[in-house]
Structures are given as structure tokens and as C-alpha cells.
Length: 234
Picture 1 (cartoon, helix red, strand yellow):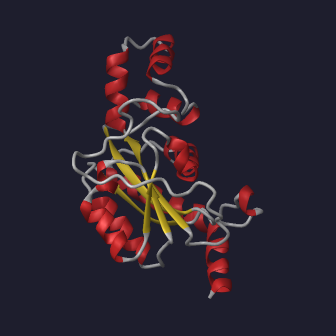
Picture 2 (cartoon, helix red, strand yellow):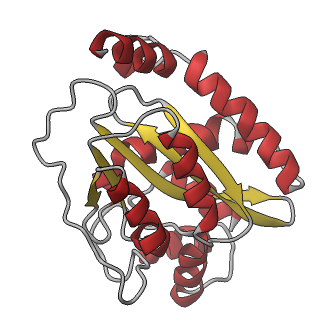
């Protein structure tokens, strides 16, 4: 799973067959069935359409994708969220983050040892303390299609947008965030426990938001863009 995590972050376009072949070349005795099971357990998918890549729950409403040709010219037009796998020395955890698309500012994040909906709801509640977006984009995972999650957004008057099944590029800014988190923080530390992971990620997201210049933002930080643009709108 550690090898899968690192290779996926480097080559997210690898599907099960190619990832299996890569692992076998590293001397790992795995088959496609095992690789598919581990990728699903870790919440990873290749960035192209494929079957059963997003685990929605039966009976949950799926919303249409709303972001095609939507001009994003200021903060709080579009927020998005996703979950990624965080490796530990003996196990793993799950990280959720909510990001403003215009500024790349991470509004909230939570770390959990399970994929229960509660930690995503906690992150959402914290993010809504800042403001609220016109559109909130997610994948079709059970956490985000749950009534608890969608009803909270609808009560705030937020439009809900959901990626096409298996289309990770619909949420490309969060995918890029995960790459930065993994290569700049997770892979440079050997987290032993969830507590160590929490402290490391807490430190990293403060750095990411307020100190790390972002090329796409003209080398400003996400916090500078998010809060400056918010003030200019007000």
C-alpha cells in the first residue's frame, strides 16, 4: 500500500493493469485482483473514466456536474472537497480537505481512521464559518452524497455539483493539492501514529495557506488571494 500510494501520486493515470505490472517489476508478488482491492480500500482511482471507481451509496441522490464553462473570477464561487489516504507506520488514515478553487485556499480539513461521514461534516461546518460558496463540487462518494452532507449545503443555499463517475480531473485542484501534501509533507516524514500525522498536517496546511507561494497565483499565497479578494468584493 505504501508503494501504491507513492506511485499513484506520481502517475495518477495508471489503471489497475499498469499498476499491477509496475508492482511486479518491483518484485512484488501481486495480481490484479489484489491491486484493485487495495486501491479501492485506499480510495484511489485512475484519472480516466472506468467502472466502479466512485463508491456511492444506494439510494443517495447524485447531482449533475455544474462547472463546465463557469467563470471563476473571485473566491467563494466554487469550493470542492475530496478524501485521500494518509499512510502511517502501522496502518493508515483518511484526510478530507475543502478548498476554494479561485485562491486554492484550504478552508478546513480533518483526519480520520475510518471513512464514516462525520469527519467530512466536521470539515464542512468549519469551512462554512468562513463564508459559503455559490457551488460546492464533490465526487460521488457516499460521504458527500449522504443526506446529512447535501442537506447542510442546501440549507445554506449552495448549489451542489458532482463529478462524473471516475472523472478525477473534474476536481483537478484538489488532486493537485494531494500531490503537494504527499510529496512535501507525508513522504518526508514517517508518521508513527494518527496524532503525529495530525500535527504534521496541521503544520503543513498552515504553511501551504500562508507561506507557500503558488505559481498559478502570481507567487502569492492562497491566504493572500482569498482574503484580499474577499475584502475587495465586500
